[in-house]
Length: 402
Image (cartoon, rainbow, N blue to C red; front, side, top):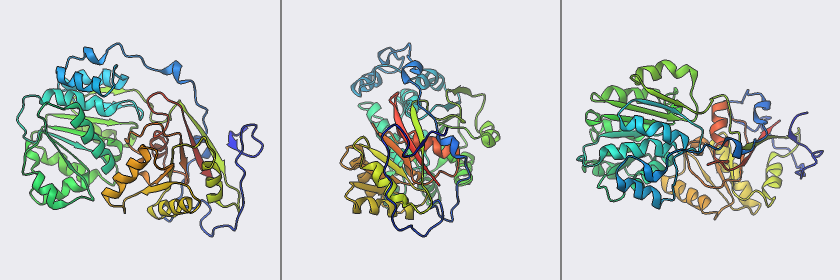
């Protein structure tokens, strides 16, 4: 029997209140595309996390890195290494190329920042490391993590993201830094304006590389690679790996260390995944509201497929008295940062977003992820639901289907 939300469930049920049907496509999705994924992919019972919890044999205090890094990590509350960190740090310190695959919430950012920071100590700021992420939010998060791990080490970073002042970025690049962290679009802008020269960079990190090597970003990424004449080390990290990208990856990496801890066709074992069937004539928004009004939905991330739908869902939630906000590509960077902060600090209950919020963001204690629209591909689904059930905790994910 399908594990779906129906009124026959012996668990708490969602009472759907049909209203006047919205005249739209059956799934509420746009011309951008309709998901062809089998809805059974969105059904999976969580397995106990205790059984699969990885226990590192190495403590943070025993890391063979600069003592200041260890002190900073301990101040942040870290005591042991995660599996991806334990199996990656030494390889990166030894300046090997590395391909790392691990599910979300497992400490991939620390896995590359800790060894890179260690190797940069006592070096002059000369734009040595280029770290690229697919979203502004993830780039800012990496920069924030860099600054906290590198406290008191006199290491400097520059962030380059869209939605900020181009003039300010150009001014900031006049002061050399050790690390540049940014999104493809703004990095490309700085190169075209002769404010950034890639020749000095020797280390390239692609975080969420599967997204960066897809059709949307690949051309720009290839330009960056071609411009890094002195590239000596390349590090790729993601939660998923596209089989179609293997040839591209092989050209980027030279005899890499491979750390693969996560099957790309598998979603989080500690996340309870169910579907919510919306019948013909039912108002999907009423179904969503009825779910969110339950007291267990404390911190909810709702994904919609387009910017227009994100705004529409957010306004409907706000109109019903739900504390909600939205992030998508049409919002200014300041607005997006503020909305994320409100959500992280539980000042709002619901954050509605496009896939800009699906990758890499470390938001603690998200109780539920709801796919208002079915994602167009399974990798997107994995990244979306990975915002809950992080760091060994359990989570719940629901996907609306017709």
